[in-house]
Amino acid sequence: MWSQKGVKLTAKQRGFHLVTSDVIQQLPELKLVSVGLLHLFIQHTSASLTLNENADPSVRHDFERYFNQAVPENEPYYEHLDEGSDDMPAHLKSSILGSSLSIPITNGRLNIGTWQGIYLCEHRNHGGNRSLVATIQGE
Amino acid sequence: MWSQKGVKLTAKQRGFHLVTSDVIQQLPELKLVSVGLLHLFIQHTSASLTLNENADPSVRHDFERYFNQAVPENEPYYEHLDEGSDDMPAHLKSSILGSSLSIPITNGRLNIGTWQGIYLCEHRNHGGNRSLVATIQGE
Amino acid sequence: MWSQKGVKLTAKQRGFHLVTSDVIQQLPELKLVSVGLLHLFIQHTSASLTLNENADPSVRHDFERYFNQAVPENEPYYEHLDEGSDDMPAHLKSSILGSSLSIPITNGRLNIGTWQGIYLCEHRNHGGNRSLVATIQGE
Picture 1 (spheres, chains in turn green, orange, red):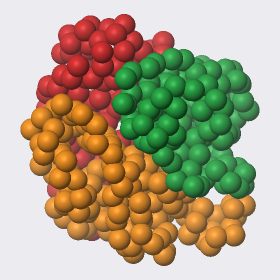
Picture 2 (cartoon, each protein chain N blue to C red):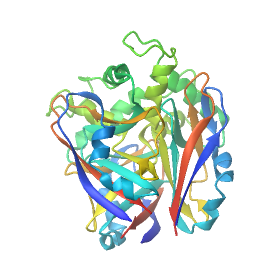
Picture 3 (cartoon, each protein chain N blue to C red):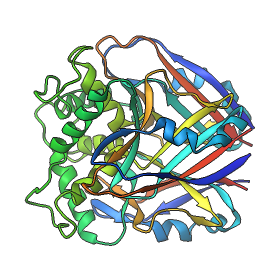
């Protein structure tokens, strides 16, 4: 069985956002799969997807602070400056964190660990809505 | 054909560990697939999976030293401190390196390069056993 | 439907290279898939694959400069030195950026965003040709 559809995530402020339940609510097809995989793909180069701790909001705050110092704005060697000082770091963070996730599906549910959640990583100051393509396959 | 099962990796010390043969031994189903994919997913947020050099142990040592300086403990801006100084860096390293691998299967074997091996990246000082979900699909 | 084949990328200089059209031209099978996934896997530990901005070459130049300072050569703690000063950083960059991509296929085409392209990230000074395994599945 294959199912593919768009998933929309509303505009969020710069930072790391837990979107597990938002994504699952848009994918009732998950319940039809006993064994399979969910592939989530973000169609942007300045936002990304990752899995991490789903309980303590301070983890997401520390993610934002860490990546801001690890991938600074206004590096003297940046040439790509036309879209603002947050743009080139956003591209770099997007490739470090990645633009897709593959997650096992077992008995109609995402088979993630107790502490795992899906993060939308918004790297732009004003990123707007973000478009994902969700591909579900399995049996 | 779909096959899905848990793979257990015994507790390892903090660092990067070559686990290719341990994983393959737990997955005899690979031999049944002529063309397909293996998806390996770690159900934790403080350990990760990556592919890298499988021959010289000093590569894994250099990985540990590099990531310890790139993602330091005790950064003054960390808020998430309750679980020890190794915990927040472990979450960050987990997202930088990633929580899953997809590897092509060809004629019953992982179709990886000569020098590629699967690393379990243990980012905690005392991480315990680690649980993976292995999903094999193909024909 | 499953299809799997090798994709060759000719030797490129150290840096980040847009290879979207080169990859697609080697995969006419994409046109046969209405809903599916393309998995691209690089069989090396000193080059990597990522998706990022496909329009302005300065983005790729900034990628090269950023990763050269984030993962420096000649760190005093590196032990793995036998293959040249560019080798250990190449292994590290390869794991940070990743060795595979999964991309949705919709109506015979890669369903990537307007600004997304496939980068071959060549981390060695003299990397040679690079071998990919492309696995196409879908219906």
